[in-house]
Length: 359
View 1: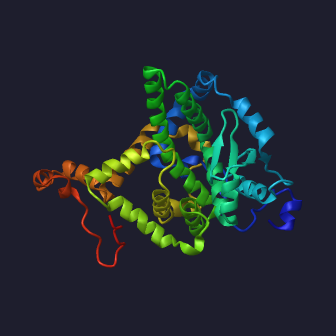
View 2: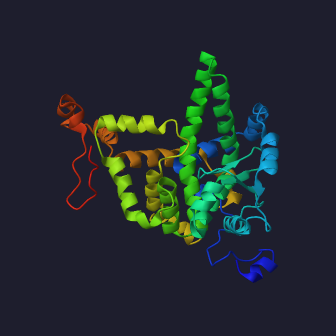
């Protein structure tokens, strides 16, 4: 940050010249599946209040005291560079109130935005030590995006229920009910991570830095040994490789996770960065928060359905191809089923394309 910015209390400009998005609504960057769910919830009068009342067992005050007592609160005097990034991110996304941020001792690279009444951002020392300034800027923007979208409430509930499931694991029916809710929340939260990745890009405005950050989270601090293009080729191979058995294994592998796989996140973010939607936001054409009250649930659900349909149509995954064939009445479908799983294998990559890993 420039000296002038420090002296002025950071009312004017970010640390370097970046576009700012006054009054931007989180609808501008939210993934369609994430946005449709949130718009529907927001349209229910008093839902948040009822939700918080039903979640009265959540130890939010305990969480705040825990971070206050056993972590380092980011400020002008502590982790000053992170404080600057936080102010920048809130300035760029026009977040009305800057949330408190804490750095907690944990070698595992991680960051989260939690809290019911007010969001709290927590970043692990493992992540601070792993990322450079521009990569970390995208992460801070990612968490501020969670705060602007109101994700912290549902993330807190997910954390609470996950812990509760462990405690009541001995109660068969009770645990099954909780696990069903956890599974639904995880599915939503994986989509919310794609939304927050987009917010991080709007804040950092450097897609290569966002990609590097995701790559480091996957492979550690060995940037000289890694390549963004090769990393994206992994995502392509993951999406298109194998047969129906691999498609089922992909689903089983992702179910217990709260986050999508890093290669998938990188691929999704690259596609959005190259999209017309992203360019329109950068040109200053985006939904405003003042108009959120007029957002129509039906429009959001239609966008969500269209997004899923497009994903299925464009996917090279064997299971998604089967769904497309069933919908289109593929003539050779019977023969492919008769040949078994091998009939649904993806064709080998074109010459010069990414090589398939040896079995």
